[in-house]
Length: 298
Image 1 (cartoon, one colour):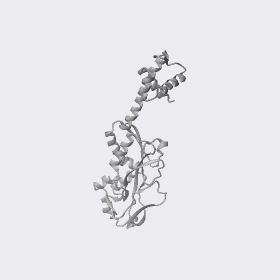
Image 2: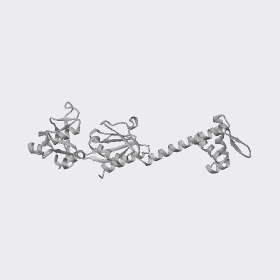
Image 3: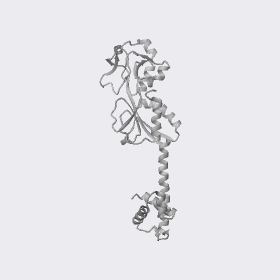
Image 4: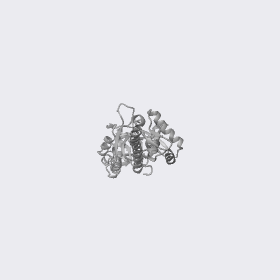
């Protein structure tokens, strides 16, 4: 038998004064009520209730046990109430993992707005470009860009990365505007990558379903997109990156889109949470906030 259930039945017997009354209250038979009490007595090796054909009374051990049972049952009910409340109201620590560039330039402002809406939530935001295992590493939400394997995870689609090519007006005034993708071979391109010793960098373009692959090069290469965007704004070359990240620079005219007649591969973006777990209120509310800010229709 479940000990907590037996404790609850025992407390009912004491509170109501009889096995029959406890049976009526709990929906059990009097025989089953008796079995719960006997189960506890056998477990404790002591008599809890002195029973006669006319009345019942608590033994000294039974009285002390009864008081402690009420405390335990109260704590159990409080724990369940707290868990239920946490499912309804966002609260507690939320661990989120996201790529560095997306996390620092796009996600971070959304996180602060989210925290302003939900003051009982704390966020531990870790930024790294490798695909982490949320189960092993304790993350509740993981955001990733591109087609990545995600066994055991549920994907929440966000707006895909729309990739654009852009440069500063000053750069275009000095070096001219590329009219077709192959013109980029004669320009300074800002290269996103780990090392100049790695394989040549290629940008891919599509026109009428036909792919053009262009080998690009430039004097600046970095694995930090913010560095490249600043270099582009300062007129050091042509950049290829997510429109979402460069939106403010484009809107302000500090960058100008070029080659907009050509399509560049779009990269999917997803937020993941662990399958098989009912999301808590903090997870649900955070995912809802992400969809509101970066949803497929947004």
